[in-house]
Length: 89
Image (cartoon, rainbow, N blue to C red):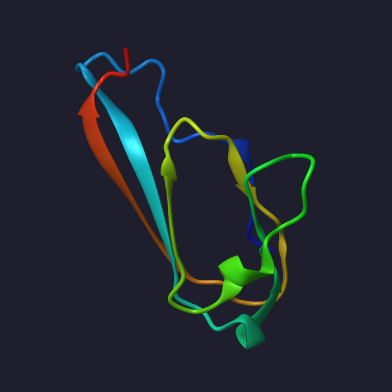
């Protein structure tokens, strides 16, 4: 199923003077609609099951490494957005 390997949302090669500063993920699916698909912030910890609740909004710095585990059943839907600003100093 769908997943995202460990990554951050900043494009280090961007040269227009802007960076993604804040990443936002809104959980659109009910946890009963899929299995797997856990959102991970730390390679040494498992997913926080509370992040699977429909309507959960995750807001975090775009430079923070994160991943999404493979979906093993059903469909996981989410809305993702980024807020940009001047490059980090």
